[in-house]
Figure 1 (tube, rainbow, N blue to C red):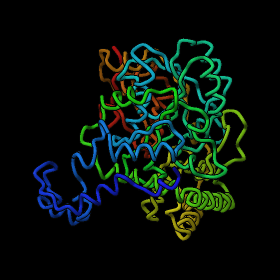
Figure 2: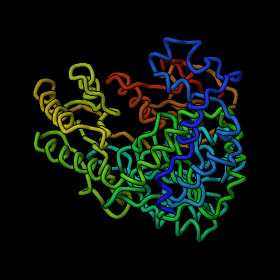
Figure 3: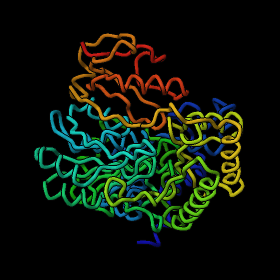
Figure 4: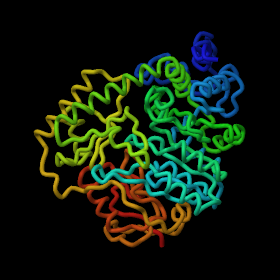
Length: 481
């Protein structure tokens, strides 16, 4: 079927639609841009003309039978999946569909605590109960790593009634667990394996990169094609293996996904899949070459540490995604978020995120050598102009949680708002997180400790963008009564 990967069924159907001069007596009301000319001029005439509603020639995302169905089948072949769903509600929707498919209210799911908020939100909605496996940590970098196989196996043995194991593949920082071994153990105990591959599109097409979830034997994978695969923001694939019922998953997706699927997002997925299949290996080799070069040059500056495969240990840092340009900044006396802000404000360089000890730059074949050089030289200048003694800086990103209540129970319990500095010892009733990366510092049902309060205060001081609480100023927090 490889030759058919040259096709893009949704794209081809939209091109036919553009040429048929149909009278538009349906939604959307902008009528191909005629109702809002400023928007049309800004986004482009063709963009507005193909922003259409479901109709017979264009198929229906909720129940595809023609061009969307064909596009799903091509994506399945390209990614090595039994079936693929086009997701237009973001990878958040794909992660939540995985959890809802595997778990009902009261079911246990084994997962690392350094999951994206979407996974814990799924537990709030469906009532599943997390069994957290604390990730490993790298003391020098202060970051959470992957899950060790022995810790996952211990959680499985202690919770034989768990329905699934969720794995980050990779983490935001590029760290992978031994997902192949985790799949073997989980399947031997009748559990599904769900992979959050929000940051792993390229694992399906790159050479000498960590194994993809589908190749490792996972049952479902949520893949953010928009992050590193070239589709529009908010578009993703949900990949499923042979143990999963396609029809049931579609029913689960249709519980929450829009019935007005955006054809702009769908056609971007269709064309991204085609491009990835035909050109992915060359594109991701270029991305790795850029990132490897930048790592080498940044490490020559001194103080910064652009880490990579030298940290692989066959356990909780089983493999490293070489496309990730993760840089530890604390030894130059700057929090990652401070470097993030300086790069944007003083050098017009927008990187992915900065936390209290690290920055992450996303590198792709769409970058230019000159831009990579500019990033490297800017880091050198920032060290010279702003670097200082690192003593007294916070030295870790991850604090093991004290889980008291299940997320759903805490979130929907009676709560009261109180000043965050007076909440020590209370049970959190909402989320607190830095975004990005969107990994909760506190999730509903967890004990608020002095360590966590100190960490939140430090994040505020350094300028992290905190989210999740009802109080937008993050001065008050909802606690369980």
